[in-house]
Image (cartoon, rainbow, N blue to C red):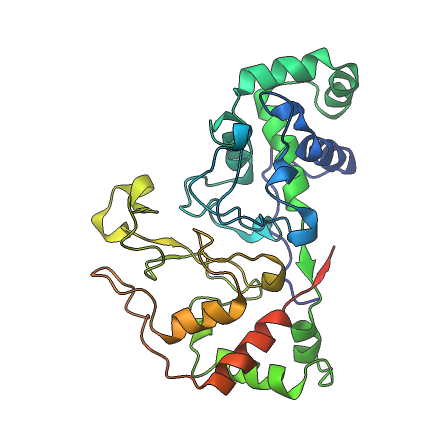
Length: 296
């Protein structure tokens, strides 16, 4: 309930139960890391809506990454992947953590050799793909599993569908604020509560070194400090918040936007003080918690 129909997968990667099952096995298997100590699920925990619980991801040898591990739920609706949008498809995204020296810390070729040497994986790949174990098929399997990670049917969805008892008075007031004075809808729009656009809200601006976000992908001066608008579905499960994990609670997030974000010369023009009262902040926070949904 509440979600749009999922976009079709690429023509060269149709979804099948066997392919999703293989991708799921790979996602939870530390065989993809250099020393067999970490899996994709080490940073994207299912019980936290497939997001991380540390401010930034912690990878191989305890090395810290640059950014918070975002939720993977409903990424099938994403126009681009990662906080900075450097991948355009889930297939392109899937292999990058394997080769990141601060994440799984190995190479795709080394991971493929381990998979080929494993009789179960060699058989599973040959059953799903006629080419067997290849980098393309590894990416296609993981991406297929990620496309299956859907979450809808929140109490907000049920309220909008006509079950007016689904939200409390405070949550209904928060919904009104979300759609009016809070102006949250301007960025967190649509059924997945994200416009998938990139904006500079001033998060971590002034840090040393400054994370330039989208600029690192496009090289466009106007993209300095811009990061993708995240979905708000299951946001109560995905703390800490922001691309740098700098805010611990949803109330802190609402207060950050109530202040108008973090001032800088490239701040998005939508970022302005909201003049919400403490009661407003509590109600808006309650509404955000009501966006917790049920996994498909």
